[in-house]
Image (cartoon, rainbow, N blue to C red):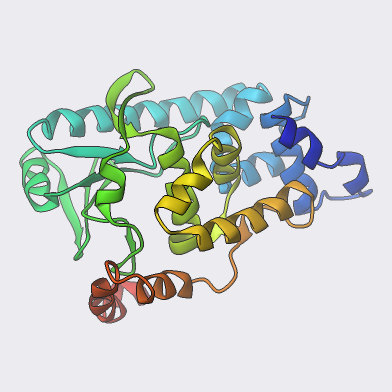
Length: 288
């Protein structure tokens, strides 16, 4: 936490007389979450926290009761879905990714990594899940308004940026708001957050920032092991810009969306997935 204290500039240095800048808003949210600074939860701050996927934790830190209750209802729905998926797939090896993090937030969907996504999808369809998208490395289903993404490998636009084998050796039993399920160990989850931000999303959110700062121990070593130090460099540059007040979050990543392509081109175990990329470019959903 000392890193946060040193890096975050004082809010006073960014204050203007009128509407707060995005940089100031970012710093206010960070100081509330990381340092417990007293902050009034204005609509502007709450919108920015939501965009950065830290709305629940920011609302809790600033005692925004109405937002807290609404977010907790959504979170309970996601937790129940995760429990249902875990129970349904008891005979299929699986691990939940991008779900259990050191920040309180409502995940947009439930992401599960497995070696047999087609079998898992068939099981879930029999449980009332609707097939939404079927791609070479991902199958998306939906039930009760919540998406469940079944991954063969983490990918973007049908381009694999991490092999599943690298993640399967990093599994632990975790608690997701009262639900016991298999998830990634903290260094692996934080390293995946870095790779996901750089290769897939093309931006670093405050959710990513808080995840890294709270779970940074051994994370860069994991990036080195996975040979994605290029992603770590992009991420740390964005992190520095956000913490020092040079830029707001979400912080765009340079050269995105080419980062995943460059990674696949320079890693023989990922290169075959490039053959799947044209299928994504021809998908009409990309242009609607």
